[in-house]
Every structure is written in structure tokens, then in C-alpha cells.
Picture 1: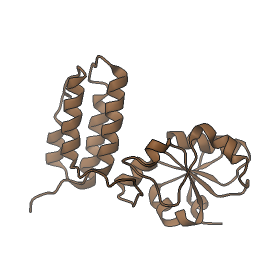
Picture 2: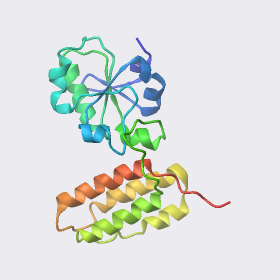
Picture 3: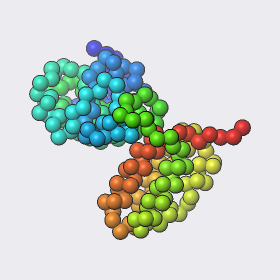
Picture 4: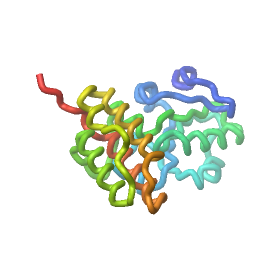
Length: 204
């Protein structure tokens, strides 16, 4: 048994939450189960080396073939679907099941290695925000009250990424798009691209 489970934070639904840094240290000793769809598994966020693709819709069926004492780490895009999968397995009697908190978004933001069908695009955080503003305007939305570029100029590196994510999420409530579903897709795509964007290079 690995130490990963012992380092997890117990959840009321019977599984434990583990962070991406701890998973990176111990992932070779546990079974990684990625519950996203195939297009996501090979998409821009990639997947963790050795992870097994088992979409959420078939997890319970497939789990019937797994030993109940398996150490399982459930993975998805942001941690929501994997938490649901972990809870399902805990109810089925799996007693060492974990959820990777933050999912592949957090994994990429921590700049941990991911397997991809193609290299991610070379992006800066500002590039993603420019794309976000342009695409929301196309959908009939308005620019946010404060410019995200002001935040980028004031902060660098990981802090800028975090502030940019917050600004992006805030925009979801500030735009009045004609097609909310299309806006949601834009926000999701830009959020994924932001996770793999390079930190801003600051002049010395």
C-alpha cells in the first residue's frame, strides 16, 4: 500500500481528496482512473501517464471487475466528476478510493507532465484573455468592468494565472450572451487553454 491514501483528506462520502503534487509523487503506486470522455483524455489538458480511461457513465459497471481493496485515484477535468465517481465506488465497498482535487486543470497549472496526442499550443495568459474577450463579444456579451490586462501587468507567474482564472469566472456573470450554452463552451475552452498557458515573461 502507498502512503498516498494516508495523506488524503477524508470526505463525508467515504473517499479521500488528494492534491496534484502528492499524486505526482505516488501515482506509480496506485491505479489512476480518468473518468473524462475520450476527446478530453487526448485533448489540450492531456492525461497522466499510466492513467486508465473509464468514462464516468461506465465507472460502476467496470468497477465490478476490480478488487475492493484497490488503491484508486479518480481523475477528471476539474475534480467534480471524479468526486462523483469516488463516492460511487465508496458506496460499492471500495475502501481506499481517492479524488484528485482540481483535476487536470490543477495538474497542468502545477506544470506537471501530461501525455497528449499533440503538443499544446504556445500561449501566453494574455493571448487566452484576448481570445476570451473577442469570443464573448461575438456572442453578444460585454467586456468585464475591469480589464484583465491590468491584473496581468501588476502580477507575474502563477499569481497572474490565478487572477486571470478568477477574472474569467467573474465574466460569466457579467456578460449577457444571446446563447448562454455557447458562452459556457467558450468559457470552458478558454479555461482549459489558460491552464496550459505559459507564465508572462517579465522584463528585467
